[in-house]
Picture: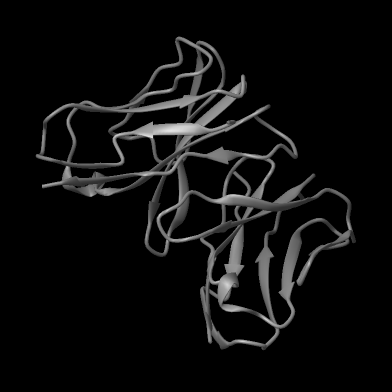
Length: 106
Length: 114
């Protein structure tokens, strides 16, 4: 089993601030996914990264896959209250990290 | 509309009373799985199925059973529920079981065992 560790576990920031959350492992992944889960709903896929060093952008969200394909980061620029949620990373084995719970205050 | 459905959405039951949570997908996906979500522990995989009649244990299978007799359905069975199975349960499906394939999740079933 490839274990994924996410940090920080909780993050509370003001609207307009920037933030980065991390997903780390000692294992090499062929792909990593980021999901966002809002209260009362199932997770929804944000992005899949497959190439070491890859950077993908989704509006104000920037995802990076580490060169060694053991870690990934999610950077949010100018966070908004609508970004509030639980951010989860998952490997190609369909297993998830414990998540980062983000709260963006107006 | 492509979706994963689960029923019931909420269930309160007593210890030892058998229950089934249904899951169905309409996307002709080969892979289906069940997760439970507990505070601070993220999503933990209970069972998964790579295709019809093929099921396998995930990380926390104790106390659960599954079956995959049809491609679209993947019910989760608790033969004798216990309070430690109180949790939020999600069913998910994906085109394939390994690789960069998106998992589509159901809306969740909140189970309370007293």
